[in-house]
Image 1 (cartoon, rainbow, N blue to C red):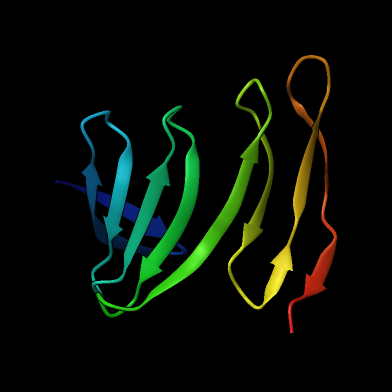
Image 2: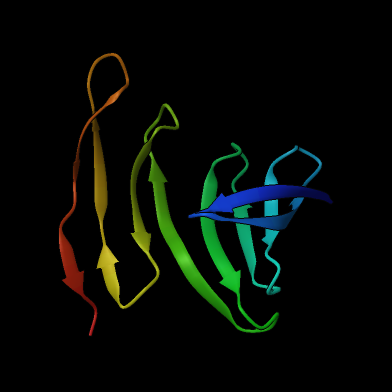
Length: 107
């Protein structure tokens, strides 16, 4: 576990960071004990981000994360009531050219 300092707005907070054997960030713990958890696939790509507010109940922050054959991000969904489907389009030099953001409600 490593403790880092995060600057949010004008405030400074200590944040505990945990990493797995592959040196990937797996958990952030904030001073109020909120935890952000990161999951990865076998290619070291993020597959899900969720948070534990009370240490028990989780909330999906981002999932349905998809990549192209070059492991570049192509889309993801936020885990709230309003789903945001984002598709990243690339130029030839692999830099994002535009992001298409259709928004729809799930209820």
